[in-house]
Image 1 (spheres, one colour):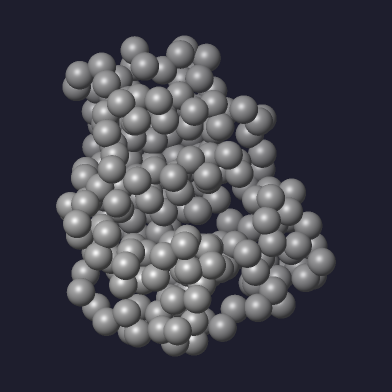
Image 2 (cartoon, rainbow, N blue to C red):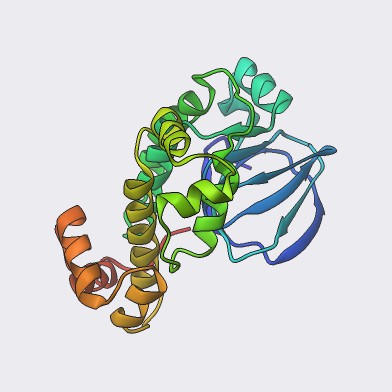
Length: 250
């Protein structure tokens, strides 16, 4: 591949079989979970965990639930040796708050059809810095909770429900959300639902009312208020603006 980063959006359906390629790859799920076996090391990538596949490394990918990931392909010349060795040593990388923010920015940019090669070239070094800035940590107890909620955002989740999934107290849940994600369970859930709704608004023609309830909002009016407060736009206007800007790149 050319020595320029390449970004695509992929969904994995079942076992995709074994693969290896002449470039490195970063898997950044924005929806659902993806199971990987990277040279014999197994793990799951999701909202709280990225995956790194080094150049010429055999790996398999399995999508067990509806999923969507940003896939960054990188020529070896774009990766400093110390970063390559560090990520290859521990290919399942906890997502820092900075990395999550960068992934969310690029997801929105893609959904609005505004991603450019120049922006991607500036974004990739920031992402690598965010992924490697902190020492790798043990897999967070939040990983299972985030995955469960992402798979069913329409459920009436409360902090108590989330805490029960992680076998912890509500106070401990809040501590982990604050220390690892710099947010609260309620704010994270609200952002997840808005993100999911915005994805569905631009990727199909389903009625806004149905999208609202599928993403965990009481009704269309509740979604409209949430989008207006958080994004300064209504669902109908968001869908219309995206269509005027053209289809998703990648």
